[in-house]
Image 1 (tube, rainbow, N blue to C red):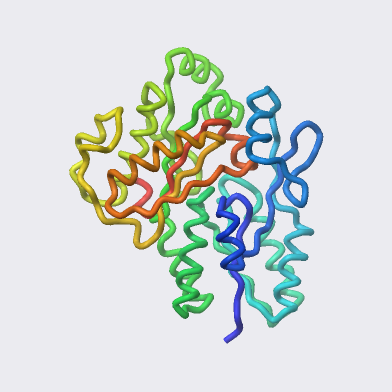
Image 2: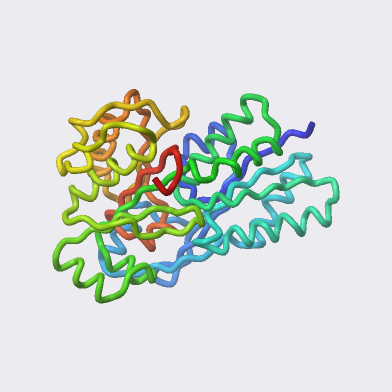
Length: 310
């Protein structure tokens, strides 16, 4: 049996130390800001990127580059490796299509090559958790086909709850109307969004006030993770101090991602730890090619749940 390499793209928002430790190969997605394209060797720090948006600059995004995909996969297969690629949702970007096309072309040219592309139908560390699970299964001795099949069978267990601080970034991306963004901002409405089974970011409700939106996404996470008494939490704006504790996440961490909102991410992490017994929480910044659409202050929770529609 050939050795195989797990690859993914930069929208998975995996921590750099984890990428290095586990030997994950990353294919970049790109963004353009102020007439400069970033994503390969040239990048802004998260602070620089989000401060640019706060200052009024509006970035645009681009999917993965077919030439980079080709060269990345070619290097791996000519080293005798098979490839398991876990892609950003095909419903949110053309990157998955680009990767699938590149894999197909190389496998036609190199008939003994194997490149499996799994469409995560997910984003950020929802996608990243799938990579972590693939790594765990590989380290347990599972083969590339078995891992790919397992991931496809469990796509709906990788869940994302999300809220944003500025409705106008959702409006600019076509998620809500200009009128809804204006009116919602005037009365401090905050949306709750999820990644659905089709891999799309869709509205799942609204609440009034920032703190309420943060406690709501934690409450929703608890519901999706299993049966608990969460009545108090669903009504709370202060946090999770009165909720039942639960076991969960199938051995995976719970991930908090943010658009340069570290203090609020830490606050959400505290709510999670109060609600979920022995929770291991990872915090990371949302990558620019996602953050361009969610904006500064966005907060998401990525976790293992019963399904995405609970």
